[in-house]
Image (cartoon, rainbow, N blue to C red):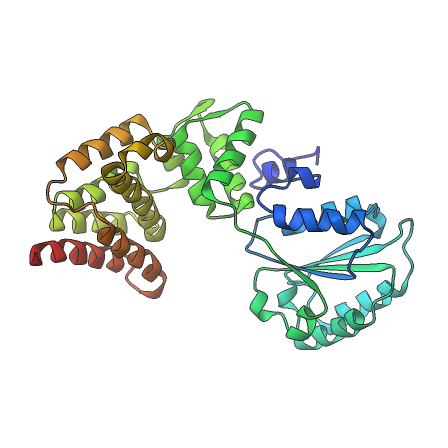
Length: 354
């Protein structure tokens, strides 16, 4: 870990990978059970870790092995994506029979286990049905539905939670600080949003930003430029078009995003987050401090002014529902701008009918 390659996308993620259970964030429901099983000496022979990519499944597996006192010589990591055939499983089964080198147990961590072939599943099942007492399996998958029920029934299943944007933000701020950088509120939140529920992806984006930043104090505008994320001005202009009942202006903004090849799903997510805050500022102003801590002073003033100007009541929950529907539909259409255009027509069209 000390020999990190400068500029590697994953360098910081490896450098700050959790080393103990205390370092694991957002998975308390799993950590507490694993710790208890070790202390009570009630360890299962097979575990199945389920969850999206980059949220710590492999890290927790390694920590578990370390806490069990299993040496590196008795820890085997297998990538099922590239070792998915029956011959690979046969080799594994032969190795399983051998006693550990210098530990009480041997542990096999099989990542992306859903990639195994049908024959390989059959071979693995035979081992899980009658496992040697000195072997522990930890299977990890991002696609639980592809794991056969016969395998699931022989494992203790742990579902890993996706970290919230606030937890991702805290993580990247802490790492940036340790690396000698300072993230402003907006830049930290944007990196967290871009991470999309993945510690690994969020830290990878942070790595890119730190590598190309020209300053130790990083602002949101610089993150937008380096990552190609939608500019705050475009997000604000779209929300303003809704608040001011300007349908044509809103559609032109969406069209501009399309021409600039902006990720429409990310653009919509940024709109929804800011639109939500605008509604809270309007109907629950006492929550301003709690809800706006991630906004820049400029954005906060923009939303406050927009709320004052919203005489026609455009900043309401039905509009937010329409935007959420647009977000859900983006992956289903071949014209990515269409859901946001339809959302505008639905929101402003409903207003016209009244």
